[in-house]
Amino acid sequence: MELNQTTLRGILAGILSVDPKYVVPKQGTWWNPQDKHANIANWCAYQIRRNRPRTVPFYNEGSDNNTAVNGAAVLKIAEIDLQFVGPQSEELANNVALWPLRADVQEQFRAVHGAIMNDEYDAVSAPFYQNGNNNVLSWNTTIRVLWYSILDTDQGRMPGLSFDGDIKKQL
Image (tube, rainbow, N blue to C red; front, side, top):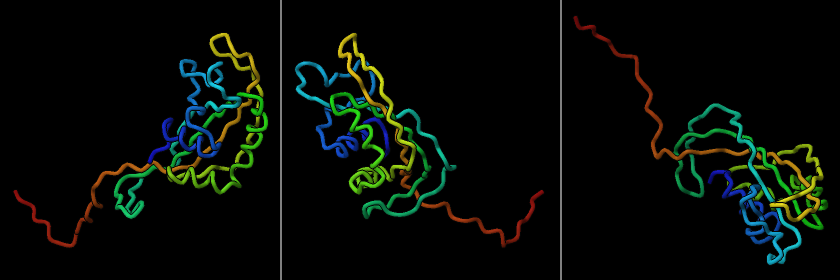
């Protein structure tokens, strides 16, 4: 499984122990959980800002959940922005610094062949506005996740070439 906007939503919902509908992509056109009919106090917005390849692609031969996976792999570092909105947003943003110690966080990122990296985990406050409404304070932080992107090519390794024979040149 790849680390992308869709899979990250489920991972964050698992870490925060909330319904995935309260973990939303960080974009203005998405449903705002702070809407007066939502009945939720705190929620999280997220955005994968960057996925940086850290290795050249390499061949992977092995198994994943007892299923052979032959293909190309690239080690990547994802930079993910998190925005917490609500009365407990400061506490939630500050607690992200403890995520590398939590086994449940490591388990969630294992689904994408990844692990949260140790980082600075600065918690930064900012006013939150959406469509001119909801003038509240939000708390933002950034995490980095090291993960493997694996492309299943369903092919075996290319056989080696033998150069121990005679090569006859034809004229």
